[in-house]
Length: 458
Image 1 (cartoon, rainbow, N blue to C red):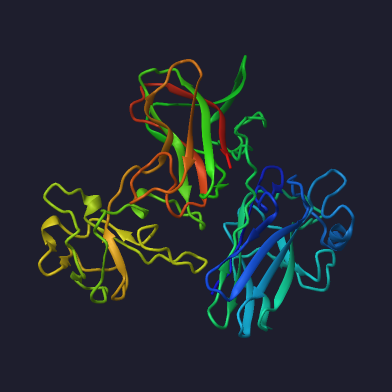
Image 2: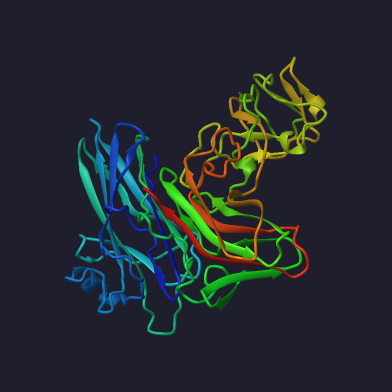
């Protein structure tokens, strides 16, 4: 059993919490069984101002004062969270709690510690934000219907010397129980109508978050530009947390000095571990779902399947469809994604079309299997692929030399792995703005952009 929640921080001069809690500062966990229930809430501060360094010696005063982790300049010096877990079963369970940091960039002084209460520091140890599984609750017995509360503070430690902590991190809190029960809760503040793209309005008057672009100004204000003679993928620098159950609007203003150039634009998608999600990670041939009849082991030349009648192969089948996507991917939290959703266990160009035997339900490989053991019963489908990115703004568009606005609404999940510019891929937790400066461009073509927005509508 695993209980999970995430915290994401991004920043400029110092880090600030772009994500902290839901609009009401509470997210209830969804029980995986009927035995445990979870609530995670940000206790304070209530604002979303910059997070700046704080001396650990003054941390107790910061959390116990009437200002609650806010200094005299209205900057946040810490964040305090309350984690509530309840054993809703009729049996006792033993639980252990861990915190695991990953994706930490440029935050060498990020620290965490347990508290005695939301306003009492206590004598707990402080720890650096590392990638190890750090135990903070050790084999605590919970009786039937018992509720436990835990408080945690996260801050950037002041070193009394020059420091420039900035960047991003993710933290996963997990509880493991003795009887395998579990719940999951994710916290991430989504403020309706607020632009989630850092410096998307260019209010910083530079190219922050868009390092591949050049910042400039004209009579209407700031803009970003890129000049080139060959294809290039231009992406935003910061990851943006998204809740795929919500509806979003994406928009930007663009123009070009070459009215014959063609462009693609929208966003790239990443999973909770910040792995890029390609179309091959969600796409498959509809109707090809089957499962292994025998273990697949390194050195095997033949794959034995329950049924391959749904495989669509002939002499014109592209290489991307001559592979397999296994529906057994487990992410860093221990969650295994269901069939026909998302997997990183996909390999292409494994066989030729004539080696799919629909009589004996076997596939003969081009070369021996070398990707590790896959047990009998594992579900899989014929691989497929499509558009690499989400082209929700531009798809093979030509642009005029005058500013024009493009926008779209993103809602729901792609079905059957089919590319849809108005939907998310399964597995998506983060996105980045994206522009494809395409091969159609002539010499010294310049692309201009401003007012890049991505905002929640509900």
